[in-house]
Image (cartoon, helix red, strand yellow):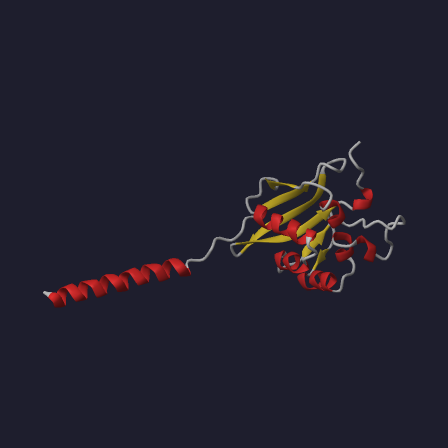
Length: 173
């Protein structure tokens, strides 16, 4: 009788451990476009180029409306070398032609100004693309940038970054 009891206890213990291991190895769901958009906004605030470059699609990214596709490798290189798109997003003073006033006219400078809102919309009825709008009420039309995401192998990836130059943003009257 004790033998049966010991085997039953051992069996239950092994079964319980198996359940715990299965729960531990269960993968976390992929972040949503809104969550990734929020991470990108925080990365812009903190000049964290790694978060931004890791969000980019392997197929590349377009900057601006109808811009050419930039390879993920070239995009990452621009961020690492603090040139081109890095200056527009993170530090307007590093640009080849900085604002004459000496002010930082980067997207980051505007993001740091005030409260940010994130709005998510499905793009044109497509089921696999979302636009994440980054909004700030301190500028005239309220929209700072739009991030477009496509799903690639179950993971949302940034395929387009459409931003408004801070130099062209007018304060709310």
